[in-house]
Amino acid sequence: MLKGFREFIANGNVIDLAVGIVIGAAFTSLVNAFVVNFINPLLGIFGTKSLNAYVWCMKGPDGGGPCVVDLKTGAITGVGLGWGAMLSAIITFLLTALVVYFVFVVPMNKYRERTAVEEAAEPEPEDITLLREIRDSLKAGNA
Image (tube, rainbow, N blue to C red):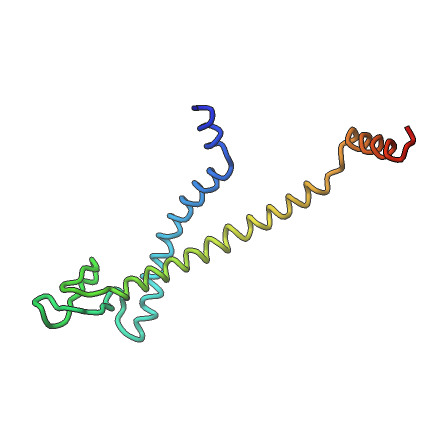
């Protein structure tokens, strides 16, 4: 049972997945900072500085009136849907996916293609070549 577990852990796909998760977490924090500090202020030209302020208010704190949003914590006083925070999360996800794709996936795919071509270009071992010649000779009836 322990041997099977060791083989599973040593499998290249598990290691790739673990590295991907760590890199994804690191890039998520970077991209989140980019969205909060650059994208949100650019969108702030058309409205408020933070997307978290955009809320669809269904019921105010006292049963009426507008909802109140604390921009530091993102807490909504009253009943409301924070569509601005959701939009910010979607932007963060898309930017993270783009960065990971173009910085890691594309170069890795090019590397794998290059190594596959190099492996295919290696000459066939001599014993395999001799066995093929013997097989062809037997087929031709020259034995």
